[in-house]
Length: 530
Image (cartoon, rainbow, N blue to C red):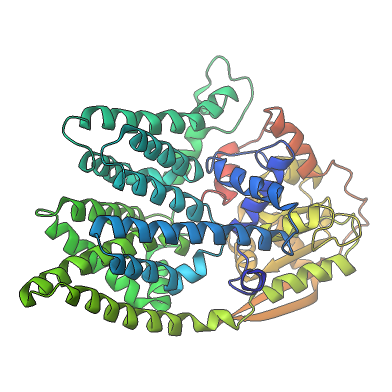
């Protein structure tokens, strides 16, 4: 288990963000930086609970590997739920096995299900909600539990609310006419009660309405949940587009992409006669609408569609082959043909995903972390990507070992857009940055975003390359480089309190830091809203 998590795929910015947020939870805060409402916090609260149960962030190696082991449990749970849902809906265990195989062996699943994404957590709770509805037999307790599960799904990642209409329709299908009114009221009430916790959090912190509205009780600039939602809706395709993601999906698993489009179309058409097919088609269609809407679309956004497509496909094939069984008047033909389909799909997926089991793209990132541990003074101000944060800040981390932590290792987005770092710790002076540890994506962001990011760009332009680490990742190469800034003037050691500690204390007390010139701009650029 450990070796699979540490080899592939490479560590991503979002993974580091969620792990550092989970560490902040163990310290009594929601985030090591001011919390900007990019996502509800319950996703990384679950990660923090796992970390506490297993004895710390470094039980399975570095902090991200420990989080990835936790993701394997969600993957196994989701796979089991896919099997159980299809078995119950179709009445065929072979169809359940087909769905299980499509979900588990898709190269997309093998890649994304191991990474620390809120989508993996929310997908499990979505499937649990659907399973509880399917087995409910109109029993009110199961319907309420399904609503609670969907509420937890929302609190894990808010965009899953897109599935609510299809889930309400599922609850309507699986309740009798006599129980339908009570069931739907109980289901929706449970969901709304849990979803409102996110809004209540903003209300209690006085961060529901934007400061720009200048309401009487607003005395200083602050982050706002409404501002964040507006920022999310207005995001462009700079960070990732649907076309770019589509190309990545097709390259990884073209068969799955074909099934994800064709099969829901079949279920939608057949839904006029089989309402359960319609419900499954709607689930798939709503998530596709979320992807094709425009704006920023990252490749891992397809995670919830993987099990939904597997369920759609298995139920559709079971129905089609059932028609053939009736023609030949021998129902076992359906099971045999389903096994044949299974025998075709699994080898194809394994062949497509084979390289993921012998490449080691994380090695470059791990080696860079070790180089920092062995060569960089611990009082240096280091600009890093988020996947290094926890291992450099927490004692015994892979980037710390038996030595002191790196209290001034800060994530580059926050260095650029958090006033507490940009204006106070660095005094808007690039010469106070000592080292920059950057991968290719981070370098691209530094060089292209402009604005406050130019502070880091100027430091980069006045630096020399000290170390270079590379590793293969499919047909790409992972490059992580360590730059040392050549100072124009001798700089004193950064004497501001470590941003993580200061912000943790502020966040725990409900304070989001000093007044910011543009809190919304800072929140948008943190990239925790993916």
